Length: 277
Image 1: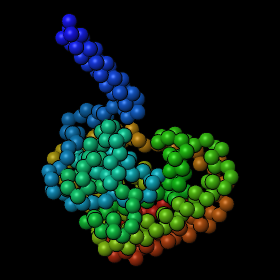
Image 2: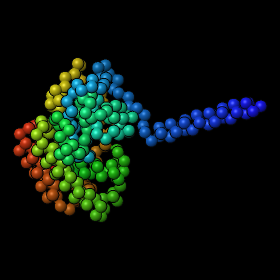
Image 3: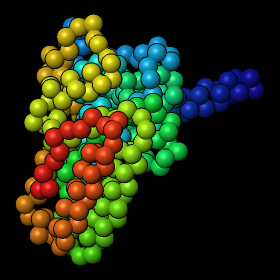
Image 4: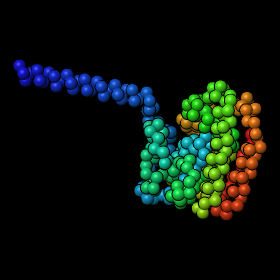
């Protein structure tokens, strides 16, 4: 009888444990979305490159400049996963399988970073530096912080000093980011988010040529089959927010500073630039 009771208790505890584990995974699935399905077209597979087969190339930007969207396009264009210095579980569970790779192992075509200290910059061999209209990038990142990754913050968030103070801080960070990356000694390709939107295929072609990546198959159809991906935010309605910027001249000065850095950098391949608004 004692043995029977022990077996019964063991079975009961095992069943409870299995139930608890199943509940854990069920709850986890609500937090982290399931694995993203890649584009189902012949020749559109995406893979990790062999270890140490690729140079360590940064895809550097300030937050809100479309870095994740650009990664998505480059993966479709090259057939090689992109990496990141951030190891985001949400992105890795949604198909960015290079997210958790060590940034120095040479298996990803570019590595996402928002950092701009010179010690970090020196970890890379070359860089694609992605810019966006400062106002739009600040708005996009403010939305992300106040709402979620693909929706807009409530209008109340922009009333008062909070938004204006946020803009002041971001302007300083944007300028320092631009100066440190564009004045580095590595080969740099300057890309603008607005140019990618207006001339998608030609801009992606510029990047892949800079990366010296040639694909076994033409990849244009792969890009066109899934241009937006899962993390490109919808277009913000900026018209009602322009009046909340009290000192537009600061954006003009910021734009000139970035342009001057780009022009003076002999190692920099420039883009067409961005409109202030």
